[in-house]
Image 1: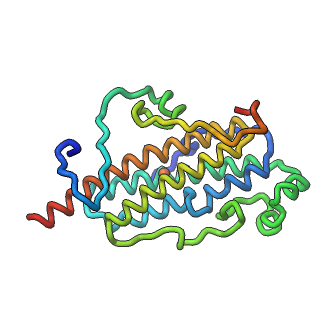
Image 2: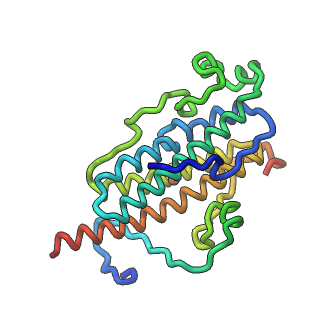
Length: 54
Length: 190
Ligand SMILES: [Fe+2]
């Protein structure tokens, strides 16, 4: 069970986001979202020969 | 109807030409997982969505993808506009130059032109929403490979913003899928 849902086979489930703390508009623009729980930055790889440009 | 804001959703300021990077980033302009594909896919599929919430979500995200297409266009153009011809040749962009000079055109990173075959509009909201969630993940992955290829911090900064938006879009399509599945299930039961 996820929340009120009886889980059925052969269908997808995604948890609903709940509105909570948000960043300021300026911070949200910088990060790409105002929602801390949706912010998931990428760690670059394959950068081998160019260590200075990160 | 749309209202146009005469500014980019996220600022683009590129200091030096980099036709090699432009050739790679252009795939998010006219490639299969790019912003033109995304915007047209959602703005077309929305007519057969069964609920007002789903139609609104596809309209909102489709509109934002148009704004992302504009950001990618600004990136590519700023990376090529002052590039000397010998650098364009070295970057493997001479065949692009032969057809388009430094103008924007909808191609992927290998120069293949955009085609409507990249997108689907199935008339089945569950199938379409799954396609859209996959499209967001493919766009996110493309931005990650582009971040790995980027040697310009100003470009990387914009790519990171665009990538994060795909993560948010995936969540919104997921929530929409949940609502649409429940709506269709209720219709079946009652
Ligand atoms: Fe997206």
